[in-house]
Amino acid sequence: METLKYKIIKSRKQYNRYCSQLEALLSSSRKSKATKEAIELLTFLIEKWDEEHHSFHDLDPVQLLRSLMNDHHIKPIALAELLGVSKGLVSDILNYKKGLSKEMIRKLADTFKISQEAFNRQYDLISSVKSKPNHSRVATSVRRVSV
Image (cartoon, rainbow, N blue to C red; front, side, top):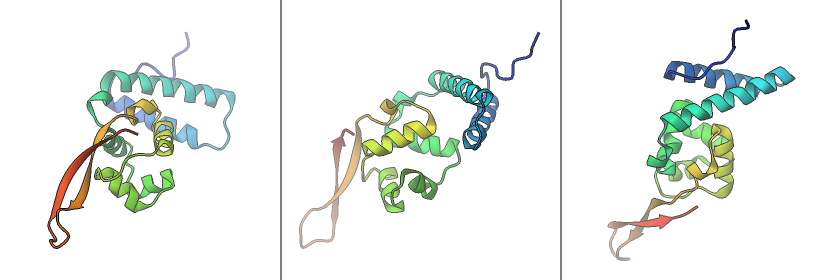
């Protein structure tokens, strides 16, 4: 009987190993039929693990993004390059000052292989508004946004 190359993920270590293998397969320039099938299978196994072990619905989109960046060892500067935006915009997003655009949501969902709905949910943004023109004091208000 043939031994399976990939099995159902049962540990965080195995999950991380499969994520690394998937990234390597995705970055290969030449994709044979076997490589494409391996990509499809690994994607399925990783998504299944994510569904069972990550409470994406407990996290707002920024918390989710921070968690995924941490899991995949992605720095804000690399995220800016990935999204095709400035470092300042990424900083504003990560600090709840700006929301995610539809295009950013699409790119993030595709990059991290999760559904767009995980990023396309309402969350609070922090906006700084000067309370009086003659004072330098800044009042912080919160507004709800939906992307």
